[in-house]
Image 1: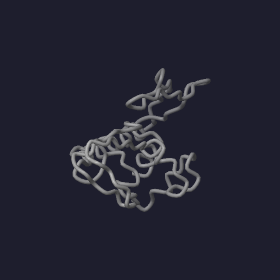
Image 2: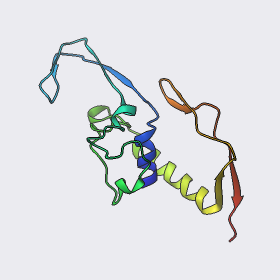
Image 3: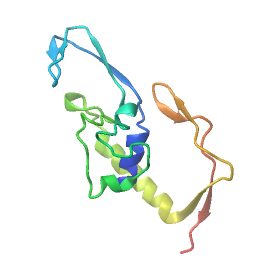
Image 4: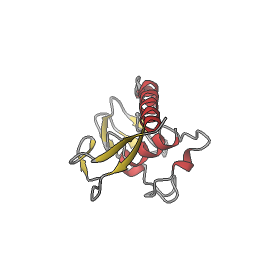
Length: 139
């Protein structure tokens, strides 16, 4: 749980998103948003907010133990409110099962000289993949 939460904090699948106000509204801080206004939020930047996440650029799964989850509005990896992703729980379950099976069955080692280079766009992806070696674990 902790590793998945930390990975999603640092590398949300959708780095930025835009919403359009269907009617006049007021944000929680009192900001008026007129109908038709586009409001962008940057989940990538929000996950690096030092006010919410001390040492924000460090990969620290311990910040999610015991099963801590920030407000979906503070870290909207799966959106929030009435637009929250319907498949969120299934997606989180699936990635945890796959990660557990992988780590249970294999020793995973980064290939020599390999590094993660990210391609930012509407989604975050590895630019050229991530070369790793998998060695079956001894039973």
